[in-house]
Image (cartoon, rainbow, N blue to C red; front, side, top):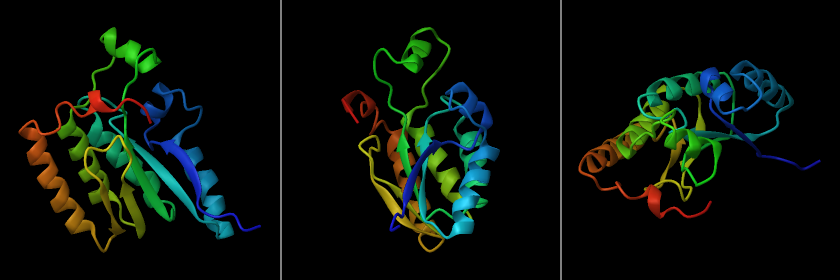
Amino acid sequence: MGYSNFYFGNESGDDYILKRMNKGYEAKVVVEMLSKLDEAGMSYIMNFLGGLGGHGYGLDHALKSADVINQLHPSMVYASELTLFPDTPLSRDLKAGKFIEANEQERFEELKALIEAINIPTVFKAEHVTMPAPIRGTLPRDKEEIIEYLDNLIEAAKKGAFDNYRSRVNSL
């Protein structure tokens, strides 16, 4: 029928996060459903939402999400970053001390871990307004270049280069 590159906002391959965010499914369902598109030869884009696990949980989130991605054949993995807005359930959890946001360094480290762990050929883009710096390339061809770029962003984040970025994102 001419449809291609369906976009799936799965955001995570981590069952703990999927449950916490009330997504209504587990990672195995993402694999099961998107495998059907693979079998049908239909292209699709998967979404990864960095920072979703909060402070100290990014590496687990990245590795579990990469595990799901590696079982599939998305034409692209498109990453964006969690940005909290007032009067959302997660912002209320933040105020109540039930959620601690990941800082920018952690977010770049999470993306680096995701890129390092993805072992399938796909396009990777992180160019959303929630990204302080755009990241794009084709994996595995550009993996080392992207990792080097992320290392530079991590160093810049350590020096505070992106400390006020989230507060300047007013809308998506």
